[in-house]
Length: 192
Image (tube, rainbow, N blue to C red; front, side, top):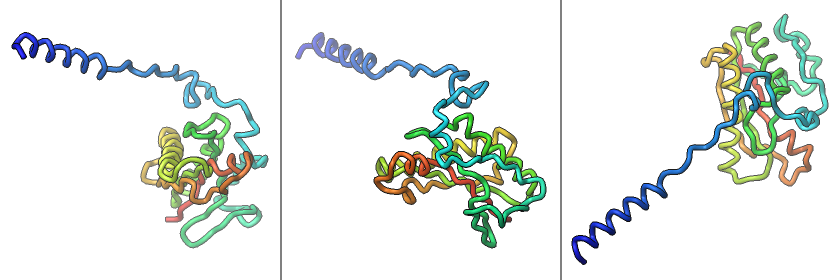
């Protein structure tokens, strides 16, 4: 092969790599149109945001754990309280927090303010669809989104832990309502 041919092949190879290796930057959405943007524009199907149908905002935090015994589903041990704070629900395959679910994290902030010796474990959960590895990652992203919201609101990072359960506790082949309940972040209170 002649020197000219080698140079031409090399030049074409470099040009091909440059043009195929460079892709366009993704188009980022306008922040005002995202769930985290100003005004909290977000999901509008209210039936999927609170699949339990129970009113989830209950300040009960002015005097610590008063009323704990009267709340069904609350489990308390020496080192944790599970079920006192309402879980945050998510859309299918999403980790963004809808505007209507933020009130639950605001209630957690109020609780932490009233109980300085407690912290939170944020457990990310998924429904049964998807691979185990994917769901562990999605559960982690959901817990991370809740953590970011709390930290942005002023909660010390030292008072927040995250964990992902993925689909380990999901109901396999569950119906739509069950899957909606499985897509959540549990807010577990840790006693110090």
